[in-house]
Length: 393
Image (cartoon, rainbow, N blue to C red; front, side):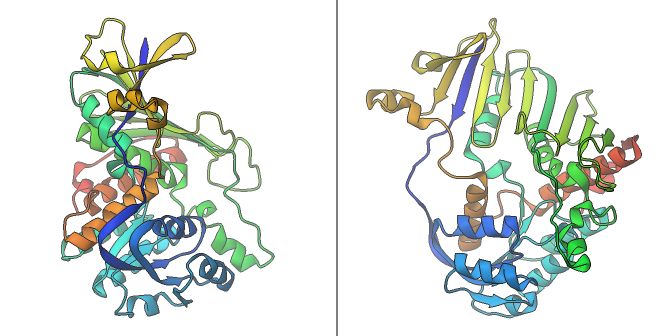
């Protein structure tokens, strides 16, 4: 079986917007800091304001976003007429209030995923975005990722053909717990371990990956079953650190999803198996594994070959002939930027040009609702039917 690395044609120069945009960032935890770092690599972006209720995080953010105004109150960011758009990276359960307030203030919104911790809040955010003439882009990255865009074109062609099975996983050995000497502060920091606020591994992680399958298939699961347990972090938590789920689609297709905080092997990936080939995606890279009886399509002659265990791998790179002539074929493998950078650039491009978001509020809502229901199935160790009416804002 041959493996084909899916690599689009990419420039390695820094990204640039056609028109300057002033951005505020609310929430300066790990994801907020990552957003600041990526915005700094996009020419034409000015980080005009940053905000967090924790003064220590605010001071740390100030060092990363030099020249930005600093606020402990998000309302001051929303009241600032110089700010065009706001990136919201607060805990999930705070998203609805901030997203609605930001839209009401006349500012575009990049909203980290999952969109909310309840179905009602997800639907409310999507309705607010629909009723506004502003951009609201949820922070699921697949539709902005050049590798995933290219892989989808293969998936929807005869290269993969009939879908056989799907799976996805995310593995990272970490605790999800942040210690603090202040009990109230510790509770606030560890909201992901609070059953009343958290959407668990299925919601906080799975939402991002479920959206990949929704996009590729153009449909959503009709039921989900799940199981979860605490396998490593036996510290009194009620949120499972290891889960296993099955999402069923109307045509009988099935997505098996596994996630764990107890082991890192395999990282984060999605896999589509078809009768002609399988596609494996890992955010900065993608591979196609062709079946021996699959027809050739012409591009194979330009391929760079390598070994994957017992299979011969074929690396597919757009513009491979030109790169090969320059002796740079292997330099085309992998993305030069993080998926977050591409998503933020798409958002800011939509803001500047007045074009629809690459990923809509409805797309984010549906992926988040599936994540919430999958988490519910995990907690109850049961099967849950997914009402299609829930997928409408």
